[in-house]
Length: 146
Image (cartoon, rainbow, N blue to C red; front, side):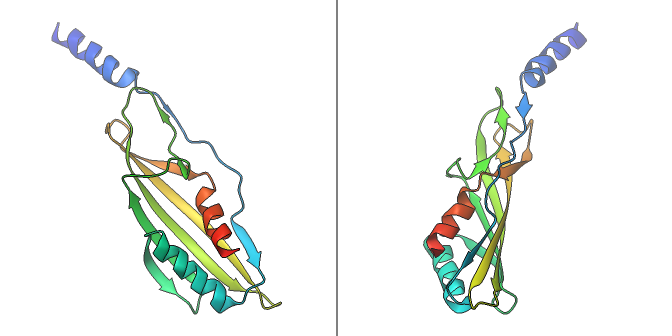
């Protein structure tokens, strides 16, 4: 009898928790600009400061900036965390992004943004899952640089 009750509880708790993985999005990860390296670098730093994003590493000589941010109040259009049926919502999204600034021969610059997301589910059935960028963060950075 205990086994039957336990089995029914397990099926009820976990059987209803379906998870549909996030979809992959096609978006621009790189964009070239006519502005010189220093101006582009300074604009990226301004974007970081105005969007309250922390940087983990910043090396102007190599052109690499590593961004990190934990969102508990986030815009869900930036990241697809997949769909969870009857499993609660997303508590937090962890963002890590690499921004690379490259000098071009014509005096301009090329900026590449690679973002990585992890989604923390309020119901620990799924725990932390990989999210997919929708391209909105990249678009936001690129439009700021225009």
